[in-house]
Image 1: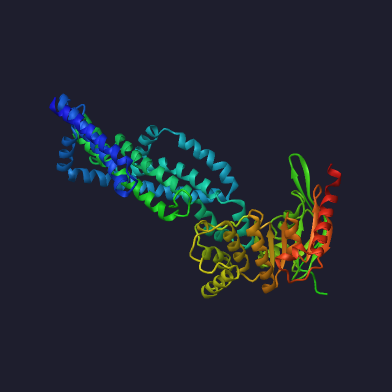
Image 2: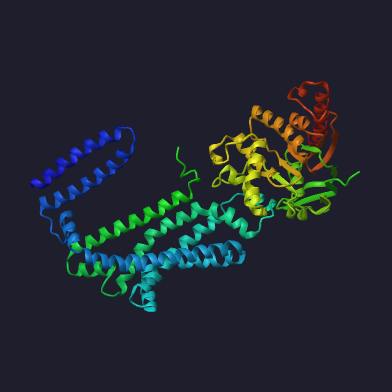
Length: 280
Length: 260
């Protein structure tokens, strides 16, 4: 019971500190410290509740137990990470987003594709991934290639729609200007349409980071070699080793956040001119 | 007498809309000679902007003929015969001011050294020297519009088409830019076609004022200004100036007469 009381006490103190911090002028320190303290408090509450009430580790392992499992299983976690994230998710993300980007340019150029392909794309996007994944595993085998294929199917359409919309983002006057210069199609594309599309393109890229990770993990539930994050999650659940499942979830959360963060950072550098990115 | 720079004969443009045809331009005939400063003035819907866009090959006429530099507007556009200044500056926000002015030069294939030299020259011409590395959104509206004029001046086009370039600016900035534009015109000897809805602006700037009226868009009066080419701002208080302004106002009123 002492543990639970300690956790509640910690919560109270952290709350008080955060209130003080929130009243201080915004700075790098406060904007980092407030969410960090909030996160730590959640972990302490979790730990205190699990220990204090003696929660069964199958239902909810304590964060410390997960951390220990994480630290002792780094080689396995790394193998799984490489299999699922680098081979499956990342390759599918690059192929899917790349193909969608090129398709978007073709769609933008051709009214026929715009009328014909977009509705078909809409239809494909509506197919449930849970249904598509086993079929793609049949087609492309148990290894990462089928996971990559699932990711391609998942990210293609959101990326396509965003890029097509982005290519139409330049306004009439900006296009007329290109016309008065007698600019060729590639010149107008490179100097106007694509730069103007970038905020939309990055919107699509950011949405697809999370989709890619989900797709790669879920696809492993339908058949995989004896490695991979999805494989590990489904087998360890069977063995009631929930601390390992949580460790994999932690890897997925860290990888997903870092992936998203990377894309967001590139976005900041590329679309610095957009009102949403300008500073001051 | 040399061939006019822009020559329109019985030019008409009809837009087909769901509510039936709209006669944006009807039987327009006009000649603009080299070095002239011609203003088009009239209420909205009189086709002044449409006429400018026809000259620029941004709209196609449905009847009549028009030549720019003796050739079709399309051929003139492909020969980069004119610079066009729009109602808003329309600078690309991902490019610096210098980068925006370089844009037409890159497209037209000027070499790098020439580009840099031209950017520097036109920035000085519009009083923006030192702002080359700034981004458009770091500048005021008046400065942005000056940068857009610089962009239209950067390449060797001897025609300048301006569509209400100062319409969105306040009167003080507008006066200043009008004065600068006259100096620029004197220095560069370009032929300028200028759309406006301000009578003082039209009279102050132009050697020729074309008064237009709507439904259908047509020319009701063409006034050759007797004012000298050298024009200080206070010329606007002289009797000659007021007399022309009066004639323009009469022309505008006549065009409106059978509306009421």
